[in-house]
Amino acid sequence: TVLVVDFGAQYAQLIARRIREAGVYSELVGSDVPVAELLAREPAAIVLSGGPSSVYAEGAPQVDPAVFEAGVPAFGICYGFQAMAASLGGTVARTGDREYGGTPLTVTTPGQLFGQLPNEQSVWMSHGDAVSAAPPGFTVTATSTGAPVAAFEDVDRRLAGVQFHPEVKNTPHGQTVLEHFLFDIAGLEPSWTMANVVDEQVASIRAQIGDRRAICGLSGGVDSAVAAALVQRAIGDRLTCVYVDHGLMREGETEQIERDFVAVTGADLRVVDASEQFLAALAGVSDPETKRKIIGREFIRVFEQAALDVIADAKEHGETVDFLVQGTLYPDVVESGGGTGTANIKSHHNVGGLPEDLTFTLVEPLRTLFKDEVREVGRQLGLPDTLVQRQPFPGPGLGIRIIGEVTRERLDVLRQADAIAREELTAAKLDTEIWQCPVVLLADVRSVGVQGDGRTYGHPIVLRPVSSEDAMTADWTRLPYDVLARISTRITNEVAEVNRVVLDVTSKPPGTIEWE
Ligand code: XMP
Image 1 (cartoon, rainbow, N blue to C red):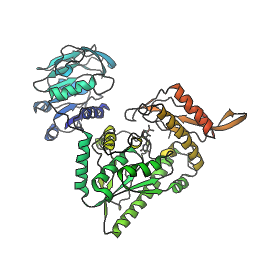
Image 2: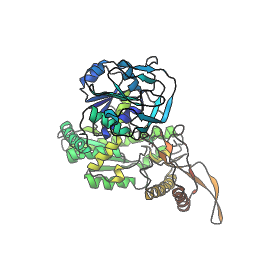
Image 3: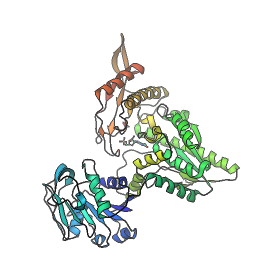
Image 4: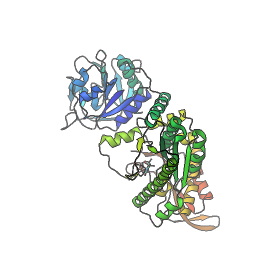
């Protein structure tokens, strides 16, 4: 395991992902973890991440030199690079000159880190202070205008570092630099593959569950589908899947689970049609948070009843249901355990919430995985792309994409418009370019239009295509005009009630991805 010490940068998770992409398993640890504890985990290498602070700032996390004395290979990035320099006897100058964004880098000595890479290359920088003298024993290998020492290495001690961010796509050779550290300096071998993950997880799920029974709630999303498919592979029909149809899904999605998921996995699936119950609970409500709370509450109620039914059925055969499968991902684990306190901007409903007397032991086979890895595991398990490549879709579904009260008629209108937008985006092969594209019905807004010989007074549909790495920040996707034109023409022609299509050109922040 390569441990990435998180100095509070949003980059730390990305670093761990890139290391795994190189085929080496990697995990994050907080910068408050004592060195002894870090070393007790016998890491194959340690990577010190970037961080928001200056090494001179009051309370800035420091690096105990003991980390570098243990003989474990170490790599410093940005703040981690400066902390490494400071801790080993180099000099960090408070230049106050910020270097930010794409920056030309000159490789002065190729060494192991840069190897055959071009001497002049562009790298992504984001720093104020700079290392002005490398610690004793280190070779300076690169420089930039704002960073006299932009990279250094001590191959004998297997230590190296860079001022720039090799983990971001804006550093074109970044991944190669990272791999040079992992393979050429630290001497590691790539062995982290998703085929291995499937084998290991199946074995460990069997060991955990034994010959008992488990239940899994399917949401229609990638994570729960892959988690369920893994558990299904491990324990077969001792897993029961429950899918709560809240009536707020998009066109064809419920059928996809009922048909495609079951066809591939052979899972024992119970579909609970609760759409009447959800609609009744949502009647007259247009406040976004209230809608979210209602949907979350009803979901738990319906799921709880379904779980009790599964338990009752098992009891008839003298069996118990002891385990609940959840598709928790590594970033959720990091965020809930990390305690860095990201503000709860919207209440996400699909987390926790079962009553205390209904207790299960959790089975979380995706706990160590990033999203890309989960998709790959799904592919290994034979799940179709429609499921594995599915873009994010919020738990409360179309309920938070109708601005105003949610009714069956409005859901039908939105579902038609959304299906057209998705169809055209897929036909234009834009699915992988877009993170997701919410389609929103402004149900409380009307505008005047003209169609045929008549005046219309209909509702606008908003297209919200966004590009993102992690949904924390996003930019609006510059869709080709001809695609936008086709979507607009088709929606206004084919969906009665809609006479206008508008494009949301707001980034996040300040806008969120969803409208509610
Ligand atoms: P926002 O609107 O906060 O959305 O920018 C960020 C990402 O989260 C999704 N989202 C949700 N996902 N339950 C979910 O599972 C929810 O309640 C929920 N609300 C927003 C949203 O689609 C985007 O991908």
